Length: 223
Image 1: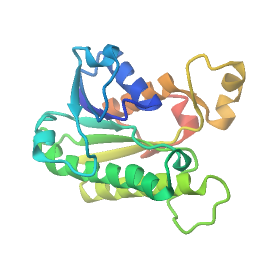
Image 2 (image 1 turned 90 degrees about the vertical axis):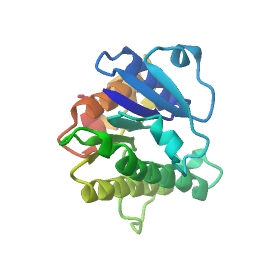
Image 3 (image 1 turned 180 degrees about the vertical axis):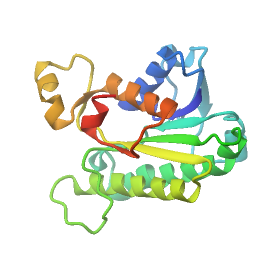
Image 4 (image 1 turned 180 degrees about the horizontal axis):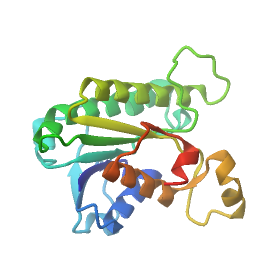
């Protein structure tokens, strides 16, 4: 399968790229990035680096480089507190993601064989909230933003059922490999997941699909 990966300079996206290189079923990955990537990624024969400076727009010359792509693992975003302000967090997390999904629906999905759907896997977060008016006490901005992205992607999928499908994964805490015994012991109750496990789960979903659009943290641990 040929896929697009975003967020490769980040913690989750970098893990997705490395796991894609190791996965025999991923035949090629196009990594969209604005920054240089480590040699173990950029020099891999399975990786094509596509420089894309502005994720708010998808000109034809960018989409032409992605001809034949069948799916996307989207790992751009993060907690709202990681951005200068909520407006910036919303622009990067919501606007960039939904603009890309619409661009893929219009520019990439029609190139696939009849009956095949473009698959889009979004890295969301535990407790994402679709109801933008709901009173939230904990991580309200992050949860609302993640929920807004999820709903927007599902709306796009519902409007393009013949050639586009989407999944949102909701990890809790994401930790490095061998992060410690306490993290392992609390994983099943708190949703903590090792980043490589998360990356493999997202790749499995883009490869095989999944029964539920929203994949909760406890389910991720079993994939």
